[in-house]
Length: 601
Image 1 (cartoon, rainbow, N blue to C red):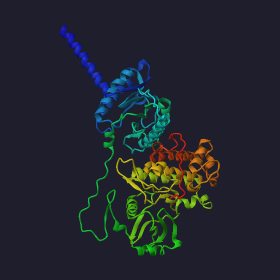
Image 2 (image 1 turned 90 degrees about the vertical axis):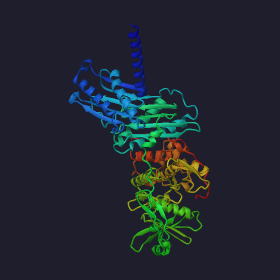
Image 3 (image 1 turned 30 degrees about the vertical axis):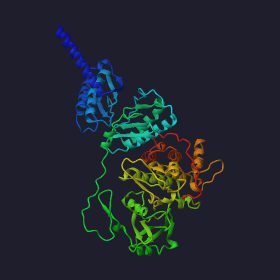
Image 4 (image 1 turned 45 degrees about the vertical axis):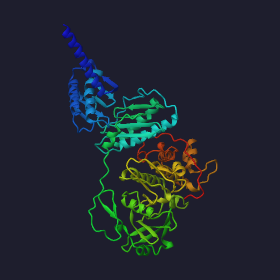
């Protein structure tokens, strides 16, 4: 009798241990049941549901599901649809354990459910009697701060702004994942010297990019209601969710491992070096040599009619730009660096090598260079409509830029900067974005030019500093102008100023406004604050503009010029915002202003 008693106790302990282990593999958060009548428990639908749950559990053991699987069983009114999605940073083993546990747990939590969903920290499992595949579903929703009832006591508004900015960045990156890939992104944002904000967003990968963004935007809009100034929070929808904490809750190592490695350096077989030839490694499969790009000075002089004033197109930060025609009839733009400019041979080669590697429709392409004696010359493709400032700030030419053209120019510049920051296999900070460095082709498509001040960041590098401040005051971010710190968010600031110039038709560096506004940014901000933002619009646009597009652009521009770089949106978020009405943007705060020196360069 005692043996039987001990056996029962031992069996109970083993059962408890098994249940505990299973629960460790699936940390329950929430569930929702849409119940059927009790008479439907033994129906054909219930049989199909059991088959579905069995199929989900068995497919969770496969390694090729990428953490997501959906299927259906039955026909007509007895058909049941189901899916699971695992958190994007977790291993196949953790995913499998969570889904296996969920297929059992959901039956106990929803014994007569006809459509049910259960959320765990590691996975979500749901089924329904209606088709739920490739559709945005924001109901039932669940938002909470979990055990994080503690409030942020230091700078709570700034904390909320950082959470919102990180969430918008996550939504843009998760939504932009290619078909078949995980629609998943994480973010680490510094709050202060001792605390970071860690955030994560994910959509079911069967959603389109626009649907994923729409779902996450709705989730982000729910954060202030549940979690304002809380040290952590989540908003859970059936199709997407967002989550943030001040502790690192996701597997950063696994996320980094899933990112594609940088391409290996090209292998160059040794051979006798040709005269005046230096091999420059190209990012990609090709090798570019300085010799292959080099022009003779005599060729350049003949092409530009010996740098005739009639051929002069404009003047950049380090020299003059001329139009030229090569013997084969090809038209070129020739940038001739001034001999007393601050740009030396190193900066000259920097621009040549940088631009030669870049291939994007919104970047000016380099054709070659000339380096003879004291002459340092860069040859670009010829862009026939000169630069943006040639039209934007001239009273007689402003009218040629209607709103549709200006909106296209803003969008094109954004795409070019996004390419520099994220898509070019290098992280390139331009550092001198301004209207005179935006060229316009025959169709008024913008092309970013003048990379003499650009800097390459290595992988995982987020910012750098310098004691030599270069660029144009008025377009410089405060942290760069005053402390020499620059990052991708420095370019975002410059882009924000550029947006406001395009909208208003007013040049920031020569802006004088009565009524207490010291510069363009403060002028636009005061109208935004007072609800009169449309009054800043260039009068030449009259009634040809889209009100929603103008307000959206002003909103983006003001977010770009925020004092805190972390609050400024990433370029991926900006591009998505300009192409979608569903992105929810945080409200801009009063921008930072600083005294501009009289010498703008």
